Structure formats: C-alpha cells, structure tokens
Image (cartoon, rainbow, N blue to C red; front, side):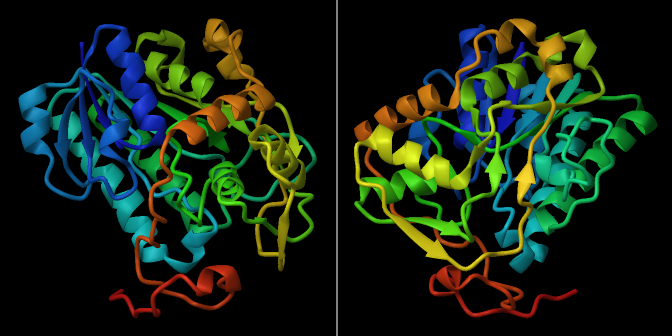
Amino acid sequence: MRAIVTGGAGFIGSHVAEILLAEGHRVLVLDDLSGGYLGNIPSGADFEKHSVNEPLDDPFSKYHPDFVFHLAAYAAEGLSHHIPVFTFTNNVSGTANVLGAAYRAKARHFVFTSSIAAYGHPKSTEPFSERTACHPVDPYGVAKLACEYHIRACEQYYGGPAFTIFRPHNVFGPRQNISDPYRNVVGIFMAKGMRGEPMPIFGDGAQTRSFSYISTVAHCIAAAPRMPASKNMTINIGGDEQMTVLKLAQEVSQVLGVPEMIDWLPPRKEVVHAHCRHDLARRYFADIYKQSVNIKEGLLRMAKFVRETPIPPPTNCPSPIEIMDLLPPSWRERVSAPVHSAM
C-alpha cells in the first residue's frame, strides 16, 4: 500500500511514517520543515518539501496514495488567540487543500489528527467522551473542529474518502520539538532542564492533563485504515493518567537529574482540567493499548533521547502577532510587532 504523511518530518508524523514503513507500506512524507526536521524522517521514506497550502495535485497524482495521514499543523493552543488568521489559514485551509488532493487522487482513507481542544472548557468533572458537545474556546480548537466538519461533509457529499478523526492530547516523546517555547509543555520543561534554567509554570501549576506517550497514539493512527470499526469515526486517543503541571515539572527534573527550579508566571486564560475517556480507542485498538507506556517510563525514554540529541535553536513564532492584548509577558519579549491582517 502507498501512504502520504503530511507533517512527516514533525513529531507525531515521523512516528506514524516509521510504523507504516515497518509494516511494509511505501511512504511519501510531505513537510515544509517549518517545525519539523529532516533528521526526523525515517529511513526508507520518500520526501518532498511542500506546504499544505501549496498546490498538491502533482505529488498526490504521481504517488497514488491508498491512505493519507494528515498531521501537518501548528499546534500552539494558547498562542492561537494571538495569531488567529495564521491558525485558520494553516489548519483549516491547509486541511481542505490536503483533503481535496486526496479525493482527486482517489485515496481510500483519510486520517486526521484533531485535538482535545475541540471540546473547550469542561462542563462537568467527567472526562470528555466522543459524545461530549464541543465548545472550543480558542482559535486552535475552533480550527480543528471546523476541519472535522469539513472532512465529514466531504465524505457525505462525495461518498469518500472514508475517514478516521483522532483527538489526541498532550502527546510527548522522542523527536518532539523541545525548542518551541509556545507549545509542548513536556518539551519546554525538558529544554529548560537541560539548560539548567527554571521551568515556566503559569499560575499555581494545579492545572491537570493526561500526558500521552507517543507510542500508543502513533500506532493507533497508523492502524486506522485497516480497522473497519474506526471507519468514519471520531476517536479520543491518549493516556488516562492525570498529572498536575507542577508534578510534571518535578518528574522531568527527576528523570533529567537536575535541581527542581520553577519560574512562576502570572496565570493565563486556559482550560484548567482537561481529560478524555478512551473507551472507543481501547475497544478498537485493544492490542495497542495493552502496550501503553505510563508517564514516568515515557519521560525516561524521552530524556534519553534528549540527552543524545543536540538541542536545536529556539523555534520562532510562526507568524507576526495579530492581537497583542493579553499576550503573556514571557512571550511578548520574543515576538515581532503586531500586524493588521487583511480580513
């Protein structure tokens, strides 16, 4: 089988591409390298440098993919409030472009990584299930939910491609970009620890998340096209172990063997407690979930990778700031002046 993986030089995408290759598929990675690295692309994969907002019919028609895995995105949820036009262009328009190319190339299955951000603020203490109503509270979550609607509408109107939509959350592990100061809290803490700097925490650190090691997430994504039960389904994917951000900082300090140092920052507007139920994922991908890695073991594996891999230069904000109001002071120092986008 032939598969195209957008964002395959990035974190999750490179792991998905690696799994597909190990299963004997041919894989074409499309990535503009704005957040990924050539070194992440697994050996044996074909590669073309492309943005998801560029014309894609040429590589798609030449490769004739059976499956398309769309993982290219800029997933800085908090920053998305301040770069909404970039967020919508990169995620919504980009997804529509990839999906259109996949349809015209007669791809049979389209796999999309959405986000827990589609749910927004929890209305109760219960974790989100796939039946929970979605009320996203930031442009990133709005964009991801819009992509989900578009993918479903395409299948309903044209009769294909079939799809699987995953809503992962707080994924971490080897190859994660630890030099992006705006996203990936585990990566941010790892980079700070390696540099002997305090780990930044907004507010009191009591925010809780279920941090998800990459192996389960990537294997479920790669398996979706051959799992009939996941056809045209939306599925939460990730870990169940809840942890506060402060506890995470302590655990990262421990696995790196560095002193615990915290840079306490003013609170920002964010979802305080966000967790998902994974009943569907555990049912459809039972064998994969049996091999899940807990947070502590995952942090040990990621720390080993970080120690053995040069830390790349800091990743810049991908767009000029569009709305400066309420931008955290720690971010304000790094970004360019605001711009007025054409609307």
